[in-house]
Amino acid sequence: MFGVVPKTIWQKTNPPDENNLCSWAMRCLLIEDGNQLILIDNGMGNKQDIKFLSHYYLHGEDNLIGSLSKAGFSPDDITDMFLTHLHFDHCGGGVKKEGDKFSLTFKNATYWNNADHWKWATHPNVREKASFLSENILPMQESGHLNFVDPNKPSPFNQFDIFYASGHTDKMMVPMIRYKDKTICFVADLIPSSSHIPLPYVMGYDTRPLITMAEKETFLKEAADKSYILFLEHDQLYECCTVKHTEKGVKLDRTFLLSEV
Image (cartoon, rainbow, N blue to C red):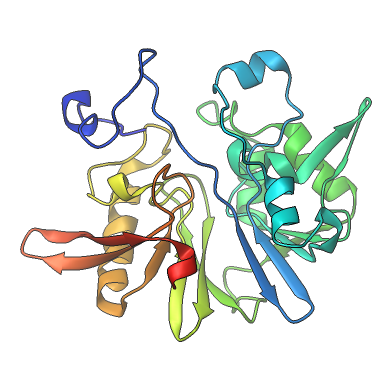
C-alpha cells in the first residue's frame, strides 16, 4: 500500500498485524439531490468465492446495503451509479450473483464510467488483470445500463466536476462535489488515505507511479489553495481531511467526519 516507502517508516502511522496486513475501508458516498440519488463507488461486494475473499480478511459489520438502509434507501432507489474506476474493490458491489447468473445490484440506475478506462479494464494489462474481473464489469454493458462521461466535455452532473488521473490506472475519475459553498473531493485511489498525502507515498498497485506523484502534487496544491475537503475512501480511521501549505510542501491539516461539514 505504500510502494517504495520502507515499512520502518509507514508502520508508524499504519501498524500492521501479525500477517503484515493493515486495515482499510471501502467507503462509498451517497449524494441526494432532488430526484437524483447518486452513489459513488460500491466496494467489492460479496459474490466472489471463499478463496478470493479469504485473501482480503474482510471484517467488521458494515456493508453497503445496510448503510443505505440506515439512510432510508434501498438499492432500487439509486438513480446513478458513478464508478471512479473498475478495480474490484470499487465496483464489485454493483453486480450481484443470483444462481449462475449475474445481475445489477442497482437495477434502476445508470452506471457511469468513461470509454478510455472501460477499454483499459476490458482489455487489461498483466499488471492489473487480477483487479479487473469480468463478472464485475461486463454485466453493466450487457444490461444496457452503462453510460460514459466524456473527458473532453463538461461533467454531465450538476453536482460535481471531474478530475481525471491516470497514474493509478488509466482515466480514474475524482468527483469534485459542490456542497454548502464547499468542494468535497472523492479522492478514490489518488489519495487512498490521510497517510498517502506525502508525494512519495504511492501504492505499489499504481501503474504509473511518477505520474501519480505529479497528479498528487497538482491536486494537493489546489486543494490547499482552495480549502478542498478530501473524502477518503480507504482510510480506516478518518472520513475526511483538509491539507495546508507548509515550508516542506503540502501537509495534512485536520481530520473530521463528513457529518461535521
